[in-house]
Image (cartoon, rainbow, N blue to C red; front, side):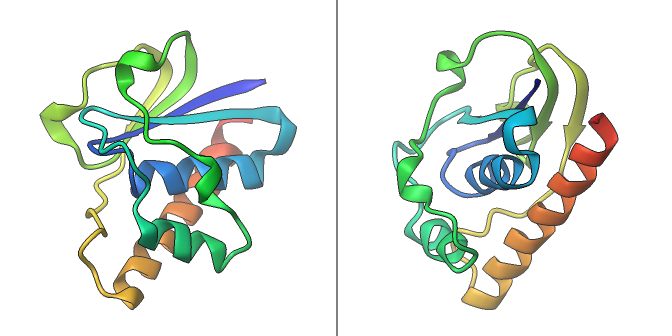
Length: 128
């Protein structure tokens, strides 16, 4: 089983959606988690709504701190959080320069969501 960690600042939007897509596309072969360097403590309602459009329920997720994450990872992906994301040991590291969609209009938010989905598919293909 491959372990993936997705990190953004608040763990409320981008990293939550990436975790969801890794679970959707990776199935039982992938253990996906997400966390934030300064977690908001809640999932953005827009993330919940736009993942629901695709049939995924983000209300089962929780906003987590990097302090709560332990173990080794096959891949760690940071998402535009710069110096706010500490280095976490992993076999593979990527930084996806994705804009934070929390204040975007619906179409722009969906575009970020769809970009994340595409990047997760590519990552899963690369690590398998």
